Image 1 (cartoon, rainbow, N blue to C red):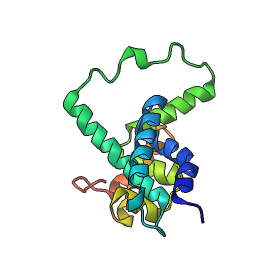
Image 2: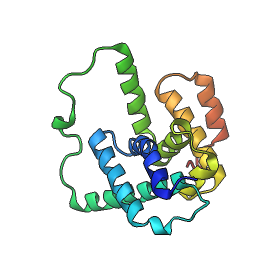
Image 3: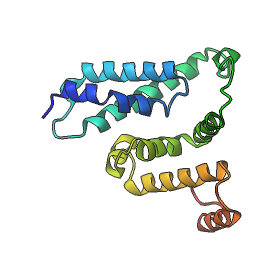
Image 4: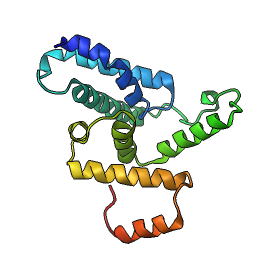
Length: 178
């Protein structure tokens, strides 16, 4: 069995992928990974052997992100949609445009749905691990994932109007959406 520090190093690519669910910009995502690694290494004595290192690291990352958001909200450094953050010229390939369209659709998902979609759909985390990371029941995870997938397909124009009608019938007005 690998040492905890070796496990952490092996999970860096997964951490980078998960960080991209929080930040569009690579540099911001990398900063979040670095913050996560710093916190994890300084608290490695708190890791319980026999539990999932990936879940533990993802939970640290999620908490670090929420802490950073609270601080940024208080400080309000400036406009989030600054022109300097946009690329100088957009790629012309059709696949790049579709990829950008998908990424934007994912970013428009509610935060909890986006998080579960990335954990399970992209990173391949199990439902059980996702419940640990998000701190909610497995039914909630499954519901968020289902809604995220349906909304993503709808945003991308990949669903028929019948699917929307069926979905609306299952979730009448006034019901709680996670």
